[in-house]
Length: 296
Image (cartoon, rainbow, N blue to C red; front, side):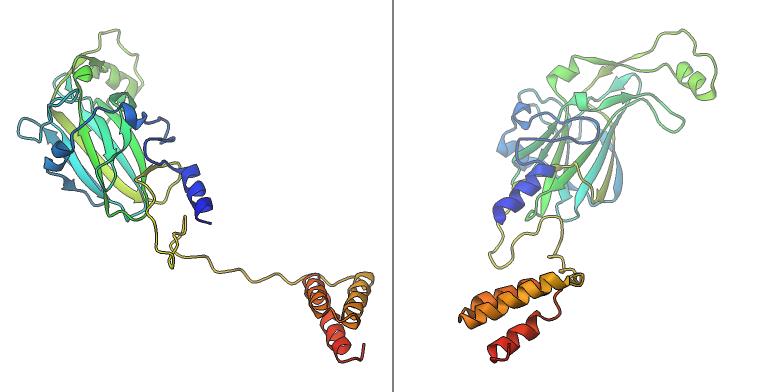
């Protein structure tokens, strides 16, 4: 039973290091994420976020920093509850003054083990709108495994991304498209990637599918097995009454019951009676009783 439950859970989510589909994009295999030392992770000031929540984040020289291996510059570090069901996280990095922070995200389980990796390529460029600026944006759908209290979300940028740029949309072009005018033939600005920037986080809790499982399934006490998908075992539905049995079938079972009782095979007679009643017999029990009493 436990093996079947585990297989079911893994068929719709992710165990450590094997991400599945999340929205329209796919997170990268966690094994290719930049390595971060345990001491570095433990030293970060992890900020708790309790959904639903929206937060503007300014990354600058006073923000937490990681300058280790491929990771360079300011980072954002958060803890998220693991007991609120699935989590939907929309991360936006806002362009300002032709500068842009190209985010990558590493998700860790309760024990700060890497569980899912979203490289900067996951966060696609979105042109400005009436109420929004140029931005890189992506949505993460995560499902914390049972038995955890919290998971971790680390946002950072890399050396490779700092060497790249993002082509923005000229504001005049965006305005023309918005009002239905002809789009002018003018160049688009280029945003350089920087170690600081402006982020926006929106986190909601939801009961969704197709999400990324964060953390290993925890062993449950034998007296309280884990039930996948529900908080408690579902109550058994009332059995649907069987259709009335045909006369020939009724006679077949009744004769079988009489013969079994006559041969002293009470177990067989009981089995025949139970099977007959499941099929809609209304006389099998009476036949069994009368046979046992020697009146059949």
